[in-house]
Length: 119
Length: 119
DNA sequence: CTGAAACTTAGCCATTGCGCTAAGTGTTTT
DNA sequence: AAAACACTTAGCGCAATGGCTAAGTTTCAG
Image (cartoon, rainbow over the protein chains, first blue to last red):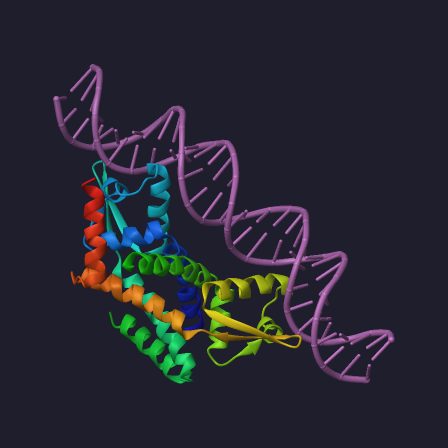
């Protein structure tokens, strides 16, 4: 059960890191860090056709790094801060390995699971 | 000079995140967190031809996440912890944006953005 | 000095990634 | 009602990714 949680976690990491591997997408996240924005507002600084830009938005959304919602003809995007924690956790996990503290890692995972359950 | 620093930083992020976007490569980093290892030692857990595995090693090395050295016929790989800090810094920077904190670096970026707009 | 070991190089193949244009859909504005 | 706006869908082209096999190269063991 920790295993399945870890697999899910790992699957997310593929998408998240892939999403972060592009400068356009990182710039979009930087912009959204200051607050929500529409697609065209986000696209404006980039010298790119709109459909090309939209692909970046889809990748960001699929990775869970942003959330979008359409009202009327405008789609508004917002950052999903939770996903940054997934990256942070992976980094922490890695450091735990360096420091030979794999036991505490398991403890951490279990603790997080309990937190989830009690929500 | 800040610019060249930023470019280098951003350029590095492309490679780093790309490297981290693959589960095989993350697993290799996990293994190397416990200490250096040879190519064949690292490759052993994976059901993959050696040349395929070597590509992952090259990508990790190019991204700066690992360092390798050949002695005799054996190439030994070790983790490069410094590169993890680059990711950590990016995360911190992102949080700083959410929190509306503008240190010198971000102030610079925003200023440049405004300059672009007013062109 | 011959052969096994540990990579290494070269090249093929299928899929994915990232850009484009052209045309379509649904909302607002005039 | 017509036009403008803000996406959205469809499909093309090319380069990069991630796997493979076959055939080197270099080093070490016997």
